[in-house]
Image 1: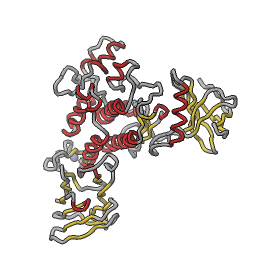
Image 2: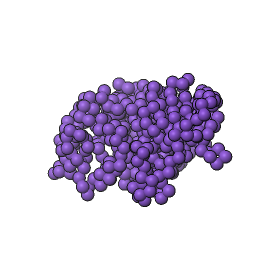
Image 3: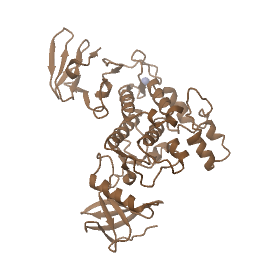
Image 4: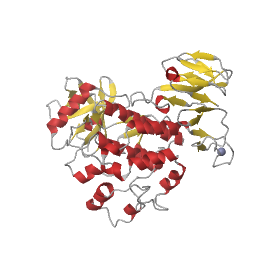
Length: 433
Ligand SMILES: [Zn+2]
């Protein structure tokens, strides 16, 4: 229920007026209002309950506002707000644009929350991982990753991350430990004595990626279906002490159940081996119980950029996942897909088709910071396919006839079979076939 009515004036801690326009939504922690601030429409989150240490919570929120957003995709707290009589507090943030849908809606395919392609779902995963790489690199942990924190534009796969008031320097906790089904096993078992950090964020992040790509929960298989009821004790076993990945190679006790877990059964079959391996590692018993064994952001960026590069569209409209460039027959129409050229990267090959990007992490030797630096982008020039040098440096190429040429940053060069591209001062070799 709304505490403030239309036209109520609040003020920021610096004394600037904030006018309440309407009530948007409410939850256990607080309510969200549409407000006017600095002549702009903004969202105000007003707290009802901030846990057992409100002073620390307030101090952390103030600190986050001072530090500013780690990246534009975070709907970050912008200003502290209080009443004229200084009773209670809240904060101002950007409004979520209407075309963005909550991640939980994608699971139900509700309100038009459907990706136009599988490639778009992979793209959204990449954006989420990239955002957490920045957050973690800045020394923060999120501590409450769940399906309510992400808003995705299904058309562009752009991602916005909200509820950033729990974000705190890694090792410091604001009193929030997470949402059931998304918490890491040690947090579930710890019952408030073990606090979330980067390591538990990484577990929750893997759950989000799995849900986005497979549309089911990675720990909810046969064992979950056979539970007489979800008591606290049963939940602690299923998501904590006795958690088993539904596709664990060494433990088949929690496999998906036919006719119940239809999404994951259908999707897992088409998932490339390296994606299956990444999930098997992320949810292995070792990684469940030892946070150091979990996949880091760089690991996800490597497999997701590969996955993105290997999805092409058949003439019939179906998407084809090309794990092996020699086997590219469309499942839907049975035709062999037409791939005129291929980039042979150091570890795998990808089709050189419209919109292909090659990032640094696809060429080996990189850090998490440089992983998503673009190197090559496939474009059309005068009606023919060409590649553009997106790196900041000149790149040497050798033509099929053996002539060396230099391609400057932003310059475009033709894609021709037999050409060899040498990024990073000849340290990497990309053959074009
Ligand atoms: Zn086809």
